[in-house]
Length: 431
Image (cartoon, rainbow, N blue to C red; front, side, top):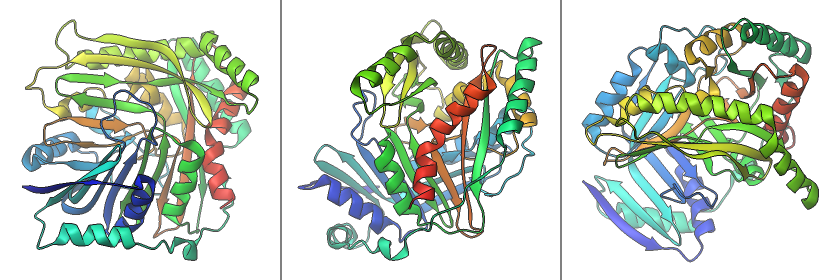
């Protein structure tokens, strides 16, 4: 049983920042932040889960069955991530590309301490709290002094795993697969990285978040491994028997000039290539959701709507379904994983071609971060616009990708990748 208390906060922003700094004392933490983005499906403004009571880490082999068993046994809040490479559990696939990060393929923990932020209050839930532990922690958070600037990051020299000419050659190779009918869309990704270096994970995340203010931002600490995410994309959410997916396909840069910015937004909404990319993935998501949906319940709630974020305009669609109350939540995720926006169509063929042309194991990138509730609900983002960091081996990585279709131009796709990479590169090269 969890001890629960609700506190009114006079200064929500200050308490959130202090709570996040305070939480670094624990080996396991997940922070999820909507950045107050007006998003109708979100239940909380922010969530902080810390201090593992139980935990699961595994490679891809039978990973979803292990997660299903763990989630069923805990019947509690659990937080963590699913890597892209769980594709190997769903289909007969492999991940043999270079991996400089060494993250487990799946990781979830049951937190002892949970903070649920909504409006000007926070609901705090403690599992097996002792004495006045909750009150003591609240006082400690209020009094917490930020000393993180004493350990600031140094500017990094970012390297490219795939250089421009090689990137264009690989995109052209993918276009040949499309021309021959093997696929009609694939998400092709490239890695940027730095070696033998140290960063301050939380300060770097805060800078990334201040630039992006993304609705599905997250910060994970798993011992010596960190995820710093400014994701704008929801993968999948379950609320009761209602399931939604919100794939992003279609990106345009922002302009400081308001008139030009509106024009860029308008141009994106009318861009035939971007719309075709989005609609292809909507069809794929509809198919994925139908695997667990009640017959006839899959609907497209929004098609190719334009959403505006700090760095970019994005084209987003919303697909929904209704499931039986007895359907296991992990089965819903497994039947649609990996998300169509990060693979392509047909999905299996696209993933095989991606594996052959990319140079890096994706890992957490293009996987999902989120949580399950005691009521078998869940909410997961898509891990894009994110920095991954292994503190022990000094390896920092971020990857970006774009959808390749028959209408793609290799140089334009490369430039789109650089737009998406801008925020991560900025915070790492200019600490």
